[in-house]
Length: 231
Image (cartoon, rainbow, N blue to C red; front, top):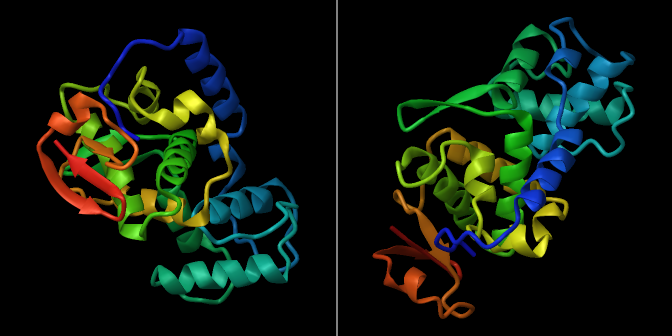
């Protein structure tokens, strides 16, 4: 649940969580531009597998071996992104994969820098907050975070928004560290590329689970599933 900022949590929690997240982030340097195909092996293949998994093209074991399953996921990625579906991770495929899991994206006409760890963190939040909600509602939760970045009333990075004391209950109860559902990554990418079913909302809540006066006082925009999104 999204709440109003309330400085009640210790900074040490933020530091520990940030270090844990950084430890699981991906390496941009590991994935080059050379062609990868059936039979390829090594850290570049492992990085390819990680990035595909981030986007919901689940590989299974990240073993650094370009086998049949990796080839199949590459073909699917290529087909869904308008690339030649030959199962070979060539220059165009790798460039598109890097773009979707890379360093920056434009949201609402403004360039927002983000890292792979930011994507992972936002997907974890979406999953913890809305894994049982409609897919549109998952995109809306991600959009709330991005809308806060655009607002002068909130911090201007994904981690700072999510870790703002008292902002999101999964940070407080630890559920943000559960493994995200695959749809959460897809929802994050749609939100990053401008889809906002919440129409600029800065807050959301489940009316059956909160009696917080502040959140109930916010102007309501739309209800998606069990969540009400508001300004």
